[in-house]
Length: 213
Ligand SMILES: N[C@@H](CCC(=O)N[C@@H](CS)C(=O)NCC(=O)O)C(=O)O
Image (cartoon, rainbow, N blue to C red):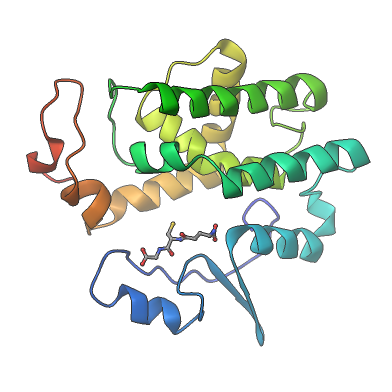
């Protein structure tokens, strides 16, 4: 919505708290965030929200104008939405953390390779007019933004084409605001930051290290 230039109010619901579920259910029976409320309408699930925002703000061209590019953008967005379960579990998104050197088992590397191939193919075939997967910023970039954040947090090794794309996404003011808001949060996410041990480069259980603010 920031990229579309739409004004909105944000209600932040901290995850992994005793009241998290009931607070989310005040807004959506699906029990998951994000949820968009627009007048009497509730739209839930990130991809449905992206589709709705693209319709609300046609001037933002959140889907590519070219039919083939648009179909490819929808395909890679749907693939992100429905796949990469190993990456989601092994590299939890934590935009304020800095965790280089995590071991990368073969199944995780396979998903990383698939994502890099998607980004490279989109950049090479459709991206010439800009810095993003389909040139100008699109829903596909929004959908992959959390993966960009993970690749940076865990310093995943990538080639120049992919690194340039990561840098472009991370340079977006909206992305920097997102990172700054996360850095200012005072709570610690149970699963990702304090719960399950995540080995760092020395193999030490970082869950016993001092918590970030
Ligand atoms: N497919 C959904 C997934 C939503 C989802 O799993 N959201 C998580 C946070 S990323 C959530 O709401 N968790 C609720 C909880 O942890 O209680 C989407 O993309 O909107």
